[in-house]
Image 1 (cartoon, rainbow over the protein chains, first blue to last red):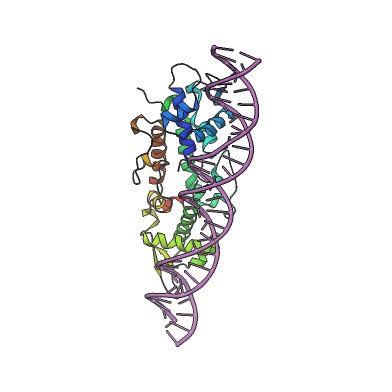
Image 2: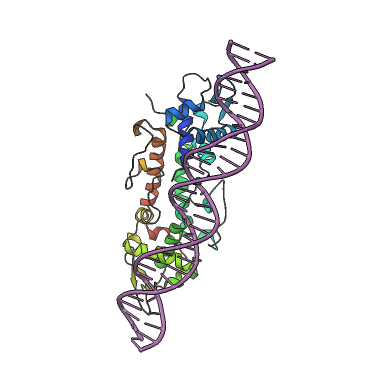
Length: 138
Length: 138
DNA sequence: ATATTACCCTACTTATTTGGTAGAGTGATT
DNA sequence: AATCACTCTACCAAATAAGTAGGGTAATAT
């Protein structure tokens, strides 16, 4: 299940990408428009800033803004920052690999065999979508 | 993340599929061989029996056994019983659909758009794999 | 300069899910 | 009749997710 954190983060990114100019948008504005708890959204945006997706500006007229073009923001990166591993099981994860405690040999594990395929198919989708791709044309 | 319940359930199914004859296998045997807490496994196997994947036999020489051929057991069905929805978000789920509270219109939602693709790709993998397919040839 | 705006940070709380435990009950087999 | 092994109900603890609270700090406009 996708966490609300990821869902809200994606919504905020698309909201910023839809802006005409690149002026900073206030947290309160995004929260209101997208029906998100403002305080919760604050922590998510802060996270996206620290991981290089957003810039921020303090003081009057401040807020958050994208620091890359939507075409350059690939979903693999966004999902990994917001949600964590793309794989459903650590033993098939590329970026968060971990061996299973049970399971003497991954090559002999059916769960591993199945989940490898699932990971690859999900990865293909995320690699194939940038922020620009998931924007809805008006 | 895949729950242990699903992982253990899959392991139990493949364990039963690997048996030479179709004699019932005791819970304790499966638990021991696959490193699973026996009591936890009990509830999982019971669930798989109630949903039509396994049969059981009580008394001496009793246990659980497959009631279909591994080729006939499709992963979509197994995953839905053990893990629940395949979709990562209820608004793109085929079997567990639910509207989002926020989000006035799904067709205008970027999260929806992305997660639809993810669901389809995962579904394709699960549809394409039966229990027989994920068995490791010895 | 200073008041204001709006991001920044820490800590806490609550609800839900997950994983596991305990133990009595029931039905079949030998 | 005894044993074996599944069945059922109830409970519990840890982890995670989701959200709250509130003060701190930096930048900007006036």
